[in-house]
Image 1 (cartoon, rainbow, N blue to C red):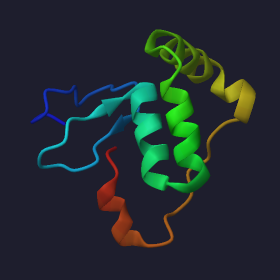
Image 2: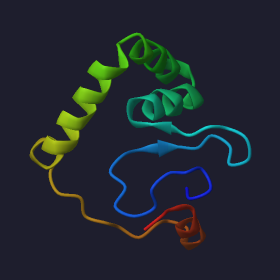
Image 3: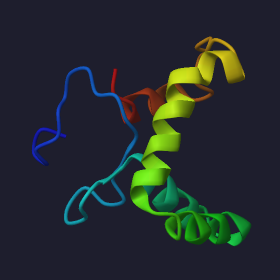
Image 4: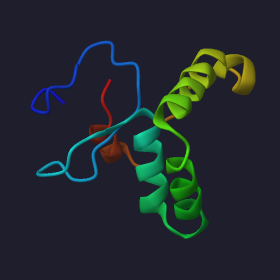
Length: 92
């Protein structure tokens, strides 16, 4: 993240890095659309559809859902990962 010029402390958004070597990171709803594209199938269609909405509108909706997420989805309770080695893939 530091190498890409992104903040490393108190980061408040989704960041999608498709390839650490050459690809530029995608933030917020651009990152969501990229992830959906990578998932393929019907999700790729949803990702392409999402990209048709202006970025300002998408990001405003993203911020609204982020602000209301606990009311919408409840509190998050961390659970152990199925494979302990996966822990190195996540930032804390």
